[in-house]
Image 1 (cartoon, rainbow, N blue to C red):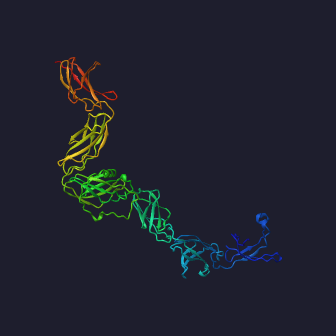
Image 2: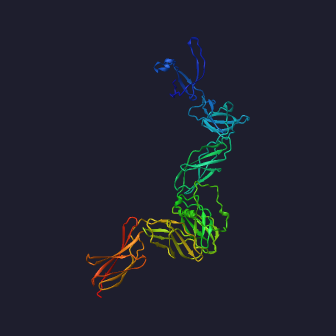
Image 3: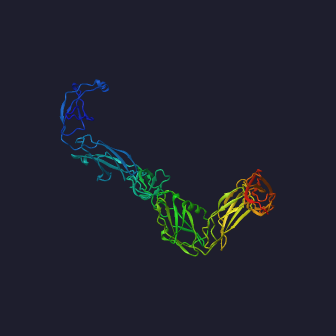
Length: 601
Protein backbone atom coordinates (compact mmCIF):
# COMPACT_ATOMS: atom_id res chain seq x y z
CA UNK A 1 0.00 0.00 0.00
CA UNK A 2 1.36 3.39 -0.93
CA UNK A 3 0.03 6.67 0.35
CA UNK A 4 -0.21 10.02 -1.36
CA UNK A 5 1.36 11.51 1.72
CA UNK A 6 4.40 9.15 1.34
CA UNK A 7 3.86 8.12 4.97
CA UNK A 8 4.74 4.51 5.75
CA UNK A 9 2.12 2.00 6.93
CA UNK A 10 3.36 0.54 10.20
CA UNK A 11 1.09 -2.51 10.59
CA UNK A 12 -2.12 -4.24 9.53
CA UNK A 13 -4.91 -6.01 11.38
CA UNK A 14 -7.85 -7.97 10.01
CA UNK A 15 -11.02 -7.13 11.89
CA UNK A 16 -13.50 -9.01 9.69
CA UNK A 17 -13.29 -11.12 6.55
CA UNK A 18 -15.74 -12.99 4.34
CA UNK A 19 -14.95 -15.37 1.48
CA UNK A 20 -16.94 -15.88 -1.75
CA UNK A 21 -15.83 -18.88 -3.81
CA UNK A 22 -17.82 -18.05 -6.92
CA UNK A 23 -15.59 -17.09 -9.84
CA UNK A 24 -12.56 -17.54 -7.45
CA UNK A 25 -13.19 -14.08 -6.03
CA UNK A 26 -12.22 -13.17 -2.40
CA UNK A 27 -13.63 -10.09 -0.71
CA UNK A 28 -11.80 -8.78 2.40
CA UNK A 29 -12.61 -5.85 4.64
CA UNK A 30 -9.49 -4.44 6.30
CA UNK A 31 -9.13 -1.79 8.98
CA UNK A 32 -5.74 -0.09 8.71
CA UNK A 33 -4.70 1.85 11.84
CA UNK A 34 -2.20 4.64 12.28
CA UNK A 35 -3.59 6.94 9.55
CA UNK A 36 -4.30 10.64 9.80
CA UNK A 37 -7.79 12.15 9.45
CA UNK A 38 -8.84 13.75 6.11
CA UNK A 39 -5.81 12.39 4.31
CA UNK A 40 -5.59 10.75 0.83
CA UNK A 41 -3.80 7.38 0.49
CA UNK A 42 -2.86 5.19 -2.53
CA UNK A 43 -3.90 1.59 -1.88
CA UNK A 44 -2.95 -1.52 -3.84
CA UNK A 45 -3.29 -5.25 -3.16
CA UNK A 46 -0.89 -8.07 -3.95
CA UNK A 47 -1.70 -11.78 -3.84
CA UNK A 48 0.66 -14.15 -2.08
CA UNK A 49 0.74 -17.91 -1.54
CA UNK A 50 2.88 -20.29 0.44
CA UNK A 51 5.74 -20.03 -2.05
CA UNK A 52 5.79 -16.28 -2.23
CA UNK A 53 5.46 -16.03 1.52
CA UNK A 54 8.69 -18.00 1.83
CA UNK A 55 10.47 -16.45 -1.16
CA UNK A 56 10.06 -12.72 -1.51
CA UNK A 57 11.13 -12.88 -5.16
CA UNK A 58 8.05 -15.03 -5.95
CA UNK A 59 5.51 -12.43 -4.79
CA UNK A 60 2.57 -11.69 -7.07
CA UNK A 61 1.88 -8.51 -8.97
CA UNK A 62 0.28 -5.51 -7.31
CA UNK A 63 -3.24 -4.58 -8.29
CA UNK A 64 -4.00 -1.21 -9.85
CA UNK A 65 -3.86 1.61 -7.32
CA UNK A 66 -7.03 2.80 -5.65
CA UNK A 67 -7.22 6.27 -4.07
CA UNK A 68 -8.96 6.56 -0.71
CA UNK A 69 -9.38 9.31 1.88
CA UNK A 70 -9.86 8.92 5.64
CA UNK A 71 -12.79 10.52 7.41
CA UNK A 72 -12.77 13.42 9.79
CA UNK A 73 -11.39 13.14 13.33
CA UNK A 74 -13.46 10.77 15.44
CA UNK A 75 -13.63 9.55 19.03
CA UNK A 76 -11.12 6.84 19.92
CA UNK A 77 -12.24 3.22 20.21
CA UNK A 78 -11.87 1.39 23.56
CA UNK A 79 -8.50 -0.11 24.51
CA UNK A 80 -7.90 -3.50 22.93
CA UNK A 81 -6.94 -5.38 26.12
CA UNK A 82 -6.87 -5.02 29.92
CA UNK A 83 -4.95 -7.62 31.97
CA UNK A 84 -3.84 -8.23 35.56
CA UNK A 85 -0.06 -8.71 35.45
CA UNK A 86 0.37 -9.30 39.20
CA UNK A 87 -1.49 -8.96 42.49
CA UNK A 88 -0.83 -8.87 46.22
CA UNK A 89 -3.04 -8.79 49.26
CA UNK A 90 -3.33 -5.02 48.93
CA UNK A 91 -2.79 -4.19 45.29
CA UNK A 92 -3.20 -5.17 41.64
CA UNK A 93 -0.93 -4.29 38.72
CA UNK A 94 -2.83 -3.66 35.45
CA UNK A 95 -1.69 -3.17 31.85
CA UNK A 96 -3.60 -2.38 28.63
CA UNK A 97 -3.06 -1.84 24.90
CA UNK A 98 -4.08 1.41 23.12
CA UNK A 99 -7.22 1.30 20.92
CA UNK A 100 -6.96 -0.08 17.40
CA UNK A 101 -8.59 3.03 16.00
CA UNK A 102 -7.26 6.13 17.68
CA UNK A 103 -9.61 8.46 15.76
CA UNK A 104 -6.78 10.97 15.55
CA UNK A 105 -3.30 11.12 14.10
CA UNK A 106 -0.32 9.35 15.61
CA UNK A 107 1.12 12.62 16.84
CA UNK A 108 -1.88 13.30 19.05
CA UNK A 109 -1.48 12.10 22.64
CA UNK A 110 -4.04 9.72 24.08
CA UNK A 111 -5.04 9.98 27.74
CA UNK A 112 -6.12 6.80 29.52
CA UNK A 113 -8.47 7.11 32.49
CA UNK A 114 -8.38 4.06 34.77
CA UNK A 115 -11.53 3.58 36.84
CA UNK A 116 -12.28 1.15 39.65
CA UNK A 117 -15.31 0.21 41.73
CA UNK A 118 -16.17 -2.60 44.14
CA UNK A 119 -18.56 -5.24 42.85
CA UNK A 120 -21.24 -3.92 45.17
CA UNK A 121 -20.94 -0.28 44.05
CA UNK A 122 -22.35 1.64 41.10
CA UNK A 123 -19.89 4.51 41.42
CA UNK A 124 -16.67 4.50 39.41
CA UNK A 125 -13.58 5.94 41.12
CA UNK A 126 -10.90 7.54 38.96
CA UNK A 127 -7.54 5.94 39.86
CA UNK A 128 -5.14 7.23 37.20
CA UNK A 129 -5.48 9.74 34.36
CA UNK A 130 -2.42 10.10 32.10
CA UNK A 131 -0.73 8.66 29.02
CA UNK A 132 0.69 5.56 30.74
CA UNK A 133 -0.57 2.11 29.73
CA UNK A 134 -0.07 0.45 33.13
CA UNK A 135 -0.98 1.15 36.74
CA UNK A 136 -0.39 -0.22 40.22
CA UNK A 137 -3.63 0.06 42.17
CA UNK A 138 -3.00 -0.02 45.90
CA UNK A 139 -4.82 0.12 49.25
CA UNK A 140 -7.21 -2.65 48.27
CA UNK A 141 -8.71 -5.31 50.52
CA UNK A 142 -7.23 -8.80 50.34
CA UNK A 143 -9.06 -11.57 48.48
CA UNK A 144 -11.55 -9.07 47.09
CA UNK A 145 -12.80 -8.60 43.50
CA UNK A 146 -13.06 -5.20 41.82
CA UNK A 147 -14.28 -3.84 38.48
CA UNK A 148 -11.68 -2.02 36.42
CA UNK A 149 -12.24 -0.04 33.24
CA UNK A 150 -10.15 2.16 30.96
CA UNK A 151 -11.62 5.10 29.05
CA UNK A 152 -9.62 6.74 26.25
CA UNK A 153 -9.57 10.48 25.53
CA UNK A 154 -8.07 12.30 22.56
CA UNK A 155 -8.29 15.83 21.21
CA UNK A 156 -11.63 14.79 19.72
CA UNK A 157 -13.04 13.86 23.10
CA UNK A 158 -13.70 10.80 25.23
CA UNK A 159 -15.24 7.54 24.19
CA UNK A 160 -17.17 7.58 27.47
CA UNK A 161 -17.59 5.22 30.40
CA UNK A 162 -20.37 3.35 28.65
CA UNK A 163 -18.05 2.17 25.88
CA UNK A 164 -14.91 1.42 27.92
CA UNK A 165 -13.46 -2.07 28.28
CA UNK A 166 -14.38 -3.42 31.76
CA UNK A 167 -12.74 -6.42 33.47
CA UNK A 168 -13.00 -8.00 36.94
CA UNK A 169 -9.83 -8.76 38.91
CA UNK A 170 -9.26 -10.08 42.43
CA UNK A 171 -6.52 -9.37 44.96
CA UNK A 172 -4.61 -12.26 46.49
CA UNK A 173 -4.53 -13.24 50.16
CA UNK A 174 -2.77 -11.06 52.74
CA UNK A 175 0.86 -10.53 51.73
CA UNK A 176 3.90 -8.54 52.78
CA UNK A 177 3.80 -4.83 51.94
CA UNK A 178 5.15 -3.32 48.77
CA UNK A 179 8.23 -1.08 48.87
CA UNK A 180 7.93 2.36 50.46
CA UNK A 181 8.98 5.42 48.54
CA UNK A 182 12.73 6.03 48.47
CA UNK A 183 13.98 7.83 51.64
CA UNK A 184 14.38 11.61 51.45
CA UNK A 185 16.73 13.98 53.25
CA UNK A 186 15.56 15.59 56.51
CA UNK A 187 18.73 16.74 58.28
CA UNK A 188 22.39 15.92 58.80
CA UNK A 189 25.46 16.66 60.90
CA UNK A 190 29.05 15.53 60.56
CA UNK A 191 28.17 12.21 62.22
CA UNK A 192 24.48 11.62 61.47
CA UNK A 193 21.86 11.59 58.72
CA UNK A 194 18.11 11.92 59.36
CA UNK A 195 15.85 10.47 56.65
CA UNK A 196 12.10 10.28 56.17
CA UNK A 197 9.87 8.26 53.83
CA UNK A 198 6.28 7.86 52.69
CA UNK A 199 4.43 4.62 53.54
CA UNK A 200 4.05 2.06 50.76
CA UNK A 201 0.96 2.47 48.63
CA UNK A 202 0.51 -1.30 48.81
CA UNK A 203 0.23 -2.47 52.43
CA UNK A 204 -0.35 -6.10 51.38
CA UNK A 205 -3.88 -6.01 52.74
CA UNK A 206 -2.68 -5.62 56.33
CA UNK A 207 -1.69 -2.52 58.31
CA UNK A 208 2.01 -1.61 58.23
CA UNK A 209 3.34 -1.80 61.80
CA UNK A 210 7.01 -0.86 61.43
CA UNK A 211 9.88 -0.20 59.06
CA UNK A 212 13.34 -1.73 58.63
CA UNK A 213 15.95 0.90 57.75
CA UNK A 214 19.39 0.03 56.41
CA UNK A 215 22.62 1.79 55.48
CA UNK A 216 24.47 -0.07 52.73
CA UNK A 217 27.85 -1.36 53.87
CA UNK A 218 27.05 -1.13 57.60
CA UNK A 219 26.22 -4.32 59.47
CA UNK A 220 22.77 -4.60 60.96
CA UNK A 221 19.42 -2.92 60.35
CA UNK A 222 17.27 -0.64 62.48
CA UNK A 223 13.58 -1.15 63.29
CA UNK A 224 11.27 1.80 63.90
CA UNK A 225 7.53 2.44 63.94
CA UNK A 226 8.00 6.05 62.82
CA UNK A 227 8.32 7.43 59.30
CA UNK A 228 11.66 9.03 60.14
CA UNK A 229 14.99 7.78 61.45
CA UNK A 230 18.41 9.16 62.40
CA UNK A 231 21.58 7.16 61.77
CA UNK A 232 24.48 7.95 64.10
CA UNK A 233 28.12 6.92 64.21
CA UNK A 234 28.80 8.03 60.63
CA UNK A 235 31.88 9.76 59.26
CA UNK A 236 31.92 13.40 58.18
CA UNK A 237 31.64 14.42 54.49
CA UNK A 238 30.74 10.87 53.44
CA UNK A 239 27.96 9.62 51.13
CA UNK A 240 25.78 6.73 52.31
CA UNK A 241 23.15 4.63 50.49
CA UNK A 242 20.00 4.23 52.58
CA UNK A 243 16.84 2.23 51.95
CA UNK A 244 13.74 1.20 53.88
CA UNK A 245 11.29 -1.74 53.86
CA UNK A 246 7.82 -1.95 55.42
CA UNK A 247 6.68 -4.66 57.85
CA UNK A 248 3.17 -6.00 58.46
CA UNK A 249 1.67 -9.13 59.99
CA UNK A 250 2.96 -11.25 57.11
CA UNK A 251 6.56 -10.09 57.37
CA UNK A 252 8.99 -7.68 55.76
CA UNK A 253 8.28 -6.50 52.23
CA UNK A 254 10.70 -5.61 49.50
CA UNK A 255 12.96 -2.62 50.12
CA UNK A 256 12.71 0.75 48.48
CA UNK A 257 15.25 2.03 46.03
CA UNK A 258 18.45 3.32 47.64
CA UNK A 259 18.73 7.03 48.33
CA UNK A 260 22.25 8.47 48.38
CA UNK A 261 22.66 11.09 51.11
CA UNK A 262 25.74 12.66 52.69
CA UNK A 263 26.86 13.80 56.12
CA UNK A 264 28.08 17.36 56.57
CA UNK A 265 31.60 18.46 57.39
CA UNK A 266 32.81 17.61 60.91
CA UNK A 267 30.61 19.26 63.53
CA UNK A 268 30.48 19.43 67.33
CA UNK A 269 29.45 16.12 68.86
CA UNK A 270 26.26 15.68 70.81
CA UNK A 271 26.75 15.89 74.57
CA UNK A 272 27.50 12.64 76.41
CA UNK A 273 24.78 11.33 78.68
CA UNK A 274 24.27 12.86 82.10
CA UNK A 275 27.11 11.60 84.32
CA UNK A 276 26.26 9.17 87.10
CA UNK A 277 28.35 9.11 90.26
CA UNK A 278 29.68 5.63 90.95
CA UNK A 279 31.71 6.32 94.08
CA UNK A 280 33.17 9.05 96.25
CA UNK A 281 35.88 9.75 98.78
CA UNK A 282 37.06 12.76 100.70
CA UNK A 283 38.94 14.10 97.67
CA UNK A 284 37.47 12.56 94.53
CA UNK A 285 34.37 11.22 92.78
CA UNK A 286 34.14 8.63 90.01
CA UNK A 287 31.74 9.52 87.20
CA UNK A 288 30.25 7.16 84.63
CA UNK A 289 28.61 8.24 81.36
CA UNK A 290 27.98 7.01 77.83
CA UNK A 291 29.71 8.55 74.80
CA UNK A 292 27.58 10.73 72.52
CA UNK A 293 25.40 9.14 69.86
CA UNK A 294 26.68 11.65 67.33
CA UNK A 295 30.46 12.09 67.44
CA UNK A 296 30.33 14.91 64.89
CA UNK A 297 31.75 12.66 62.20
CA UNK A 298 35.02 11.62 63.86
CA UNK A 299 35.90 8.13 65.16
CA UNK A 300 35.27 7.59 68.86
CA UNK A 301 39.00 7.14 69.34
CA UNK A 302 39.48 10.80 68.31
CA UNK A 303 37.20 12.11 71.07
CA UNK A 304 38.24 13.36 74.47
CA UNK A 305 36.05 14.36 77.39
CA UNK A 306 36.28 17.57 79.38
CA UNK A 307 34.89 17.28 82.92
CA UNK A 308 33.68 20.34 84.82
CA UNK A 309 33.01 20.70 88.55
CA UNK A 310 30.97 23.77 89.48
CA UNK A 311 31.62 25.06 85.92
CA UNK A 312 35.41 24.81 86.35
CA UNK A 313 37.38 22.48 84.06
CA UNK A 314 38.98 19.92 86.38
CA UNK A 315 40.23 17.19 84.03
CA UNK A 316 40.33 16.04 80.41
CA UNK A 317 40.77 12.41 79.36
CA UNK A 318 40.97 10.64 76.01
CA UNK A 319 38.35 8.13 74.94
CA UNK A 320 40.85 5.29 75.38
CA UNK A 321 41.57 6.39 78.97
CA UNK A 322 37.83 6.71 79.57
CA UNK A 323 37.14 3.11 78.48
CA UNK A 324 40.18 1.74 80.34
CA UNK A 325 39.19 3.56 83.52
CA UNK A 326 35.69 2.13 83.30
CA UNK A 327 37.01 -1.43 83.09
CA UNK A 328 39.28 -0.97 86.10
CA UNK A 329 36.97 0.95 88.44
CA UNK A 330 36.95 -1.03 91.67
CA UNK A 331 35.61 1.33 94.33
CA UNK A 332 32.34 0.29 95.91
CA UNK A 333 31.73 3.28 98.16
CA UNK A 334 28.23 4.65 97.77
CA UNK A 335 27.10 8.23 97.19
CA UNK A 336 23.68 9.79 97.52
CA UNK A 337 22.94 11.26 94.08
CA UNK A 338 20.80 14.31 93.43
CA UNK A 339 18.77 13.32 90.32
CA UNK A 340 17.47 15.67 87.66
CA UNK A 341 14.47 15.57 85.33
CA UNK A 342 16.89 16.16 82.47
CA UNK A 343 18.74 12.90 83.15
CA UNK A 344 16.58 10.65 81.01
CA UNK A 345 17.81 10.09 77.47
CA UNK A 346 15.37 10.09 74.55
CA UNK A 347 14.87 6.68 72.99
CA UNK A 348 13.44 8.06 69.74
CA UNK A 349 16.88 7.95 68.13
CA UNK A 350 18.59 4.59 68.38
CA UNK A 351 22.28 4.09 67.80
CA UNK A 352 23.65 2.30 64.77
CA UNK A 353 26.26 0.64 66.99
CA UNK A 354 26.80 -0.09 70.68
CA UNK A 355 29.75 1.61 72.38
CA UNK A 356 31.12 0.64 75.78
CA UNK A 357 30.58 3.14 78.56
CA UNK A 358 33.43 4.09 80.84
CA UNK A 359 34.28 6.27 83.79
CA UNK A 360 36.57 9.03 84.96
CA UNK A 361 37.83 9.81 88.46
CA UNK A 362 37.85 13.51 89.29
CA UNK A 363 40.40 14.29 91.99
CA UNK A 364 41.80 17.28 93.88
CA UNK A 365 38.38 18.01 95.37
CA UNK A 366 37.70 19.34 98.84
CA UNK A 367 36.17 17.00 101.44
CA UNK A 368 32.53 17.40 102.50
CA UNK A 369 31.75 19.65 99.51
CA UNK A 370 28.85 19.62 97.02
CA UNK A 371 29.81 19.76 93.34
CA UNK A 372 27.80 19.96 90.11
CA UNK A 373 29.50 17.81 87.46
CA UNK A 374 29.15 18.18 83.69
CA UNK A 375 30.87 16.44 80.76
CA UNK A 376 31.54 17.76 77.24
CA UNK A 377 32.86 15.85 74.21
CA UNK A 378 35.78 17.44 72.38
CA UNK A 379 37.42 16.72 69.00
CA UNK A 380 40.04 18.60 67.04
CA UNK A 381 37.91 18.53 63.87
CA UNK A 382 34.48 19.31 65.31
CA UNK A 383 35.23 21.37 68.40
CA UNK A 384 33.46 21.14 71.76
CA UNK A 385 29.95 19.81 72.25
CA UNK A 386 27.30 21.35 74.40
CA UNK A 387 27.28 20.25 78.00
CA UNK A 388 25.36 17.27 79.26
CA UNK A 389 22.88 18.01 82.06
CA UNK A 390 24.69 18.52 85.35
CA UNK A 391 24.80 15.91 88.11
CA UNK A 392 25.20 16.92 91.73
CA UNK A 393 27.20 14.97 94.29
CA UNK A 394 29.04 15.54 97.56
CA UNK A 395 32.47 14.39 98.68
CA UNK A 396 32.76 12.70 102.06
CA UNK A 397 34.87 13.40 105.11
CA UNK A 398 38.61 12.76 104.49
CA UNK A 399 39.34 9.13 103.64
CA UNK A 400 42.32 7.01 102.73
CA UNK A 401 43.61 7.68 99.20
CA UNK A 402 42.22 5.90 96.20
CA UNK A 403 44.43 3.25 94.60
CA UNK A 404 47.18 4.77 92.44
CA UNK A 405 47.71 3.86 88.82
CA UNK A 406 50.18 0.98 88.40
CA UNK A 407 53.84 2.03 88.31
CA UNK A 408 55.68 2.26 85.00
CA UNK A 409 58.76 0.13 84.33
CA UNK A 410 61.54 2.44 83.10
CA UNK A 411 64.54 0.08 83.01
CA UNK A 412 65.30 -3.62 83.41
CA UNK A 413 68.65 -5.43 83.51
CA UNK A 414 69.68 -8.84 84.74
CA UNK A 415 69.62 -7.68 88.37
CA UNK A 416 67.86 -4.30 88.54
CA UNK A 417 64.41 -2.82 87.94
CA UNK A 418 63.60 0.91 87.86
CA UNK A 419 60.08 2.30 88.21
CA UNK A 420 58.30 5.65 88.13
CA UNK A 421 54.70 6.70 88.78
CA UNK A 422 52.30 9.63 88.73
CA UNK A 423 50.59 11.44 91.55
CA UNK A 424 47.49 9.68 92.82
CA UNK A 425 44.22 11.09 91.46
CA UNK A 426 42.22 10.52 94.63
CA UNK A 427 44.09 11.90 97.64
CA UNK A 428 41.13 11.14 99.92
CA UNK A 429 40.86 14.83 100.77
CA UNK A 430 44.15 14.75 102.73
CA UNK A 431 47.73 15.35 101.57
CA UNK A 432 49.68 12.33 100.37
CA UNK A 433 52.56 11.59 102.76
CA UNK A 434 54.24 8.58 101.14
CA UNK A 435 54.21 5.98 98.40
CA UNK A 436 55.05 2.33 98.96
CA UNK A 437 56.24 0.18 96.05
CA UNK A 438 56.25 -3.57 96.68
CA UNK A 439 58.11 -6.05 94.48
CA UNK A 440 57.31 -9.75 95.03
CA UNK A 441 59.18 -12.58 93.32
CA UNK A 442 56.38 -14.81 92.05
CA UNK A 443 58.50 -17.96 92.48
CA UNK A 444 60.34 -17.40 95.78
CA UNK A 445 57.89 -14.87 97.26
CA UNK A 446 60.82 -12.71 98.36
CA UNK A 447 59.67 -9.13 98.92
CA UNK A 448 61.55 -5.93 98.24
CA UNK A 449 60.12 -2.49 98.94
CA UNK A 450 60.87 1.18 98.63
CA UNK A 451 58.93 3.82 100.56
CA UNK A 452 58.85 7.59 100.77
CA UNK A 453 57.48 10.76 99.27
CA UNK A 454 59.01 9.96 95.91
CA UNK A 455 57.88 9.23 92.37
CA UNK A 456 60.57 6.82 91.26
CA UNK A 457 62.40 3.84 92.70
CA UNK A 458 65.23 1.50 91.67
CA UNK A 459 65.50 -1.96 93.24
CA UNK A 460 68.70 -3.94 92.70
CA UNK A 461 70.14 -7.26 93.85
CA UNK A 462 67.55 -9.23 91.88
CA UNK A 463 67.83 -12.59 90.16
CA UNK A 464 68.15 -12.69 86.41
CA UNK A 465 65.16 -13.85 84.32
CA UNK A 466 62.88 -13.72 87.37
CA UNK A 467 59.25 -12.57 87.32
CA UNK A 468 57.95 -10.06 89.85
CA UNK A 469 54.48 -8.77 90.80
CA UNK A 470 54.65 -5.03 91.43
CA UNK A 471 52.07 -2.91 93.25
CA UNK A 472 51.96 0.69 94.42
CA UNK A 473 50.13 2.19 97.40
CA UNK A 474 49.67 5.76 98.59
CA UNK A 475 49.33 6.94 102.19
CA UNK A 476 47.88 10.04 103.83
CA UNK A 477 47.09 11.02 107.42
CA UNK A 478 44.06 8.71 107.40
CA UNK A 479 45.83 5.57 106.26
CA UNK A 480 47.07 3.49 103.34
CA UNK A 481 45.26 3.11 100.02
CA UNK A 482 44.37 -0.15 98.38
CA UNK A 483 47.12 -1.51 96.12
CA UNK A 484 47.17 -0.52 92.48
CA UNK A 485 46.51 -3.06 89.79
CA UNK A 486 49.41 -5.51 89.58
CA UNK A 487 52.18 -4.79 87.09
CA UNK A 488 54.05 -7.98 86.20
CA UNK A 489 57.69 -7.39 85.21
CA UNK A 490 60.71 -9.57 84.48
CA UNK A 491 64.45 -9.07 84.81
CA UNK A 492 66.66 -9.62 81.77
CA UNK A 493 69.18 -12.40 81.26
CA UNK A 494 72.47 -12.00 83.16
CA UNK A 495 74.11 -8.70 82.33
CA UNK A 496 77.25 -6.81 83.27
CA UNK A 497 77.25 -5.30 86.76
CA UNK A 498 77.04 -1.55 86.95
CA UNK A 499 80.05 0.53 88.00
CA UNK A 500 81.10 0.68 91.63
CA UNK A 501 79.80 3.78 93.37
CA UNK A 502 81.40 6.45 95.54
CA UNK A 503 84.84 5.54 94.18
CA UNK A 504 87.52 7.87 95.50
CA UNK A 505 90.97 8.29 97.09
CA UNK A 506 91.01 8.32 100.90
CA UNK A 507 94.74 8.93 101.57
CA UNK A 508 97.84 9.68 99.49
CA UNK A 509 101.43 8.79 100.37
CA UNK A 510 104.76 9.17 98.57
CA UNK A 511 104.53 5.70 97.04
CA UNK A 512 100.98 4.56 97.87
CA UNK A 513 97.32 5.59 97.88
CA UNK A 514 94.30 4.40 99.87
CA UNK A 515 91.12 3.88 97.80
CA UNK A 516 87.50 3.31 98.84
CA UNK A 517 84.27 2.44 96.97
CA UNK A 518 80.93 0.78 97.42
CA UNK A 519 79.41 -2.15 95.58
CA UNK A 520 77.59 -1.46 92.30
CA UNK A 521 73.84 -1.06 92.57
CA UNK A 522 73.27 -3.66 89.87
CA UNK A 523 75.04 -7.02 90.09
CA UNK A 524 73.53 -8.00 86.70
CA UNK A 525 71.61 -10.91 88.17
CA UNK A 526 74.75 -12.81 89.19
CA UNK A 527 76.93 -13.15 92.29
CA UNK A 528 79.55 -10.41 92.63
CA UNK A 529 82.90 -12.23 92.50
CA UNK A 530 85.75 -9.75 92.88
CA UNK A 531 87.10 -6.27 92.16
CA UNK A 532 90.18 -5.43 90.16
CA UNK A 533 92.13 -2.19 90.54
CA UNK A 534 94.03 -1.20 87.39
CA UNK A 535 96.78 1.42 87.77
CA UNK A 536 98.31 3.03 84.69
CA UNK A 537 101.02 5.68 84.61
CA UNK A 538 99.69 8.64 82.68
CA UNK A 539 101.50 8.93 79.36
CA UNK A 540 102.82 5.34 79.39
CA UNK A 541 101.43 1.88 78.89
CA UNK A 542 102.58 0.56 82.24
CA UNK A 543 99.72 -1.36 83.85
CA UNK A 544 99.50 -2.82 87.34
CA UNK A 545 96.42 -4.87 88.31
CA UNK A 546 95.49 -5.68 91.90
CA UNK A 547 92.59 -7.99 92.83
CA UNK A 548 90.38 -7.15 95.82
CA UNK A 549 87.99 -9.58 97.49
CA UNK A 550 84.32 -8.77 97.85
CA UNK A 551 83.34 -8.41 101.54
CA UNK A 552 81.05 -11.02 103.02
CA UNK A 553 78.50 -8.25 103.20
CA UNK A 554 78.71 -6.94 99.67
CA UNK A 555 77.06 -3.70 100.73
CA UNK A 556 79.99 -2.70 102.97
CA UNK A 557 82.49 -0.06 101.86
CA UNK A 558 85.56 -1.61 100.23
CA UNK A 559 89.01 -0.29 101.26
CA UNK A 560 92.15 -0.92 99.21
CA UNK A 561 95.76 0.28 99.33
CA UNK A 562 97.85 0.50 96.17
CA UNK A 563 101.59 0.79 96.84
CA UNK A 564 104.89 0.65 94.96
CA UNK A 565 104.03 3.90 93.21
CA UNK A 566 106.58 6.48 92.11
CA UNK A 567 106.58 9.85 93.87
CA UNK A 568 105.30 12.89 92.00
CA UNK A 569 103.78 10.75 89.25
CA UNK A 570 100.30 10.93 87.72
CA UNK A 571 98.28 7.72 87.64
CA UNK A 572 94.98 6.64 86.18
CA UNK A 573 93.26 4.26 88.59
CA UNK A 574 90.28 2.18 87.50
CA UNK A 575 88.23 -0.13 89.72
CA UNK A 576 86.33 -2.90 87.95
CA UNK A 577 83.56 -5.06 89.43
CA UNK A 578 83.29 -8.65 88.25
CA UNK A 579 80.36 -11.02 88.51
CA UNK A 580 79.83 -14.53 87.21
CA UNK A 581 76.66 -16.03 85.77
CA UNK A 582 75.73 -19.11 87.78
CA UNK A 583 74.25 -20.63 84.64
CA UNK A 584 76.48 -19.64 81.75
CA UNK A 585 79.81 -19.04 83.56
CA UNK A 586 80.41 -15.80 81.73
CA UNK A 587 82.17 -12.87 83.43
CA UNK A 588 80.79 -9.36 83.23
CA UNK A 589 82.55 -6.15 84.22
CA UNK A 590 81.68 -2.62 85.26
CA UNK A 591 84.35 -0.01 85.95
CA UNK A 592 85.02 3.42 87.38
CA UNK A 593 88.17 5.53 86.81
CA UNK A 594 90.04 8.02 89.01
CA UNK A 595 93.07 10.21 88.11
CA UNK A 596 95.59 10.80 90.93
CA UNK A 597 99.01 12.41 91.25
CA UNK A 598 101.58 10.92 93.62
CA UNK A 599 102.74 12.92 96.66
CA UNK A 600 106.31 13.85 97.50
CA UNK A 601 105.66 13.30 101.18
